[in-house]
Image (cartoon, rainbow, N blue to C red; front, side, top):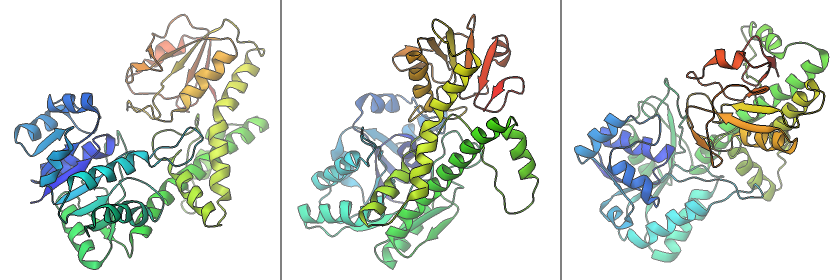
Amino acid sequence: MRNVGVIGQGYVGLALATAAANAGHKVIGFDTNSLLITNLKNGISHIEDVEVEFLQKLIYSKLYLPTDDPSNLSICDIIIIAVPTPLTIDRQPDLGYLEAAVETIIRVIKNEVLIINESTSYPGTLREVIAKNIYLKTGVKHKYAAAPERIDPGNKKWNVNNTPRVISGFDEAITKEVRDFYLTFTKSVITLSSPEVAEMSKLVENSFRQVNIAFVNELSQIANAFGISINEVLYAAETKPYGFMKFAPGAGVGGHCIPVDPIYLAFQAKLLGAASTFIERANQVNRNMPSYIVSRILKDNNNDLENKKVIVIGVAYKPNVSDIRETPALDIINLLTKEKAIVSWHDPVVKEFNNQQSQEVEDQHIAVVVTLHDVINVEKIKAIKYVFDCSGKLDWAKKL
């Protein structure tokens, strides 16, 4: 068993750290968020995928130590970087968290260790941003590998243990070491020829989803212009047993992966002089969906929402999770507010969002269903006179 340090204890890092600890590794979970670490030390999990009882068992057994003290990482022979790679305010790649993790390694790790990057970024990040900077400042020749995370928050079927992982180290020996490590808590590991292939594969996975979601979002607008149901059209297309994969339209895309990862790929492609036309168009279509939705609501309400009480149902980016990153609900709320509507929101899973609290569904003139959690009372929504459903799950409501 290994001494493993996981830098970053968010959705990816905590799930990874607890899976490795459950396999018998001694895991140090480091994060700069002191409140998050305090909660973890008290056995309070902040993600749905790590149950409280499971977390408390690992802490009690001393296989998992959450900490905000980077010096605790000094005992580790494996360091895994699992930090966010978001976008800047002008929607360009932001490697700030990754660069901070690199600085932590430079300060704390003095001997050769195995460094694995799970954080999503463009091809070349491991080699040019992580390994090169660490060597320039320390002179230590660590072992390096890429193993891009595959975490789908709230997915009850696929998790760290049964989701196949792709990995590659700087050489065959490192790749084998990484493979042997991941196989202690992951059933399937696929080795690749280079870290760059592994890094790009993650971006392709989510660019594929971004493009196809944008495709059906655009189709939903075309179908509406024809006066037919896009959901029935997709039902019909799905009956073909080959050559078609169904994606559903919605209010846009949210979370860390789909709205973000394709931009990392397009950014680096542009620097290399390669076109990324589909990615750029898909991003535009999905980001414009809130505007399209509000335009439909306006049209159905005589182009007048002033002083209308509007409630947005579900502000998380996907059903049955509390993750609000990149949620299109925020744009919808802001656009409705610009139309002088009296806007509130209801989400019993999120509870607090945009410096506001979840409100009850009652006495509103309009409801906009963005994300339909299982715990949401559909009958209360049904009592509202006008309901626009972005989820496609309410047969009686106005749909995309």
